[in-house]
Length: 127
Image 1 (tube, rainbow, N blue to C red):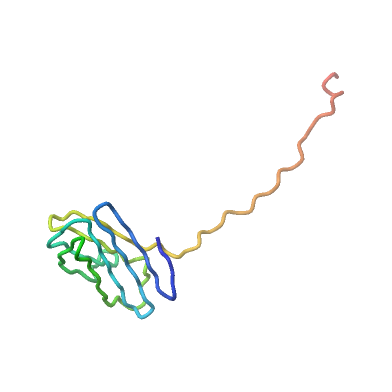
Image 2 (cartoon, one colour):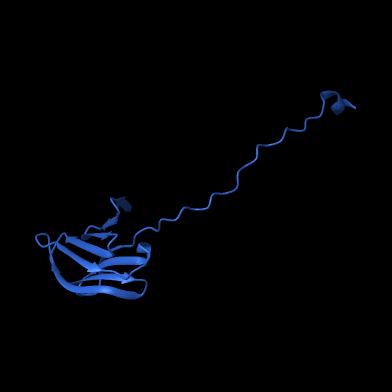
């Protein structure tokens, strides 16, 4: 889900294990946020741009220790190309969020009304 608000692009994702939020401000800063339902020592917060890692930090996360951080992002990127994920020390991905691209889909061509039906006069069926 992406909710534009006052010039920012925000998005959230959640699973039973964790939740994340990614906000991209006009000033080219990304605000990352994570919350976990149980303790995850040595987890990794990862912000990626395609296959390239833009930001990565080892964190200790738990219900009483949410994680919030701001980091710069490259100039002129499409926020829809970013991906935010939380990975445990064992390598299991708890949650991932990728913003939806703000593209309007192409509309299909307009439909035409059907033509008039061709009906034979009733007397022709007896001839």
